[in-house]
Length: 376
Image (cartoon, rainbow, N blue to C red):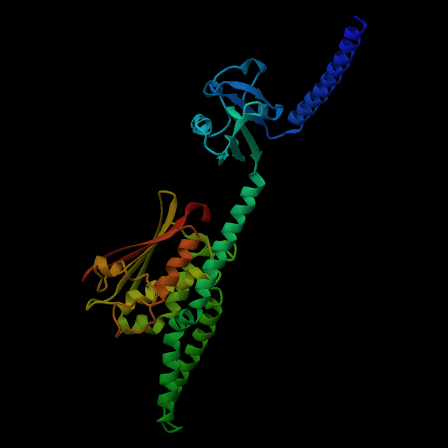
C-alpha cells in the first residue's frame, strides 16, 4: 500500500506539473489572441465557428454566442463573398488561399485561409482565417503605381519634345526665313524693306511666345502640370493674334459661343491644344470661306469645349488615325504629325478625352471633354 501510495503521489505530482504547463500554455494562447489586433477565425469541418480572437470583433459582429454557428450566417463588415468557397477549398486538401479584400469602411486586408491540422493524427480538422490590415501598404502601392505611370508618360512625351516644338514653331520660322531670303535679293533702299521688317518683327514675337508655351509640354500629368483658372476668351483672342496672317489670307471667320467662360487647366497646354485645332481648321479648309465656331457647355459630368469647322472633313478611317504619332492626312500641308498626338495625351492625362465627328466635304468637330471636378 505504501508503494502504491508513493506511486500515486508521483503520478499526482506529474499531473500537477502537466496541469501547470497546460495553464501556462493556455495563458500564452489567450495573451496571443488578445494581442492579435487584426484577428483570426477558427472554423471546423462543418464550417461552424469554433473560436475567434478579440481582434475580430471590430471586423465582424461576433459574440460568444456565435461559437458553433455556421460562418455563412454571421454578418461581416467585409466584401468577402468567397469565404465559404475558400474554406471548402482548404478542407479538400488544398494549400493556403491568400486574398486582398476591402471592408465596408474602405480599409484593405490580406486574408489568409489555412488548414487547421491536429498533431495527434496530422489530419485537417477545419480552417484558420487570418486578417492582416494592409491599408497603408495599399496606399503606398497606389502612389507608387501613380508615380510610375506619370514617369512613363513624361518619358514618352520627352521623346516627342523636339517634334512638338518644330510643329508649333514652323509657321513663324517660315516667315522669318522667307523674309530674310527676300531681303537678300533686294537693294538696301527698296521701299518694300519696311514691310518685310515688320513681318520679321512680328514673327520673332510669335517665336518668343511659342517657345515659352512649349516649355511645359512634358508636364502633362496632374501632379506635374501646374493648373490655374484659364479664361477661354483670353486664350482664343491670343490664338487669333498668333494666327493673324493665316486668318487674313484665308478669310477665316471665328465665332465664339461660350456658356462656360473659365476652366481649371494648364494655361500653356490648353493654348497649345486649341492653337493646333484652330490652325488645322484653317489649314484643311475647303473651297468655302473657313467658318470656325468655338463653344463650351456642361454635359454629363464634363465641360465640353468644341471646335467646329466647315473644312474638307475626313472619313471615319482617317479620323481613327489622326491621333497616331506622326500621322498626317495630307503630306502637302505643313506640319509634323505630332500636334494631335500630344493634344490627346495631355487631355487624357488630365482625366478627360477627345472625340471627333467629321464628314468628308462638310467639316469636322473636335470635342474636348474635361472632368467637371477640374472646372470652376
